[in-house]
Image (tube, rainbow, N blue to C red; front, side, top):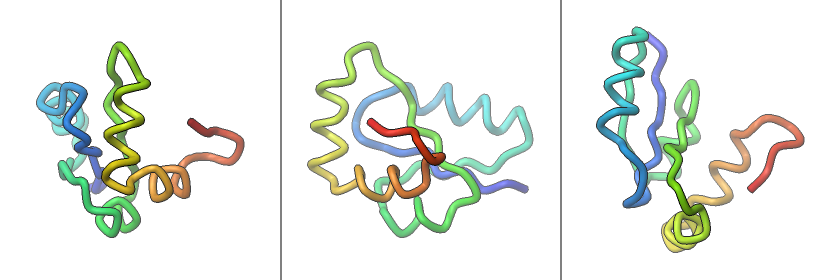
Length: 77
């Protein structure tokens, strides 16, 4: 099964995201650990309505760089 890191930054609907991934046959792991994010097959950053506070939460947890490193070339926050 594909291991997907679901980034936990105290925002976003983690439960719904995980259920959708499970229904698609993936194994989601909710995490705020940069090493787990780096080791995952894929990374899911659940969305929110207002992304400015979300970025503050990501930066406070030092998650911006590991997520950025895993994102496709040319995409950025």
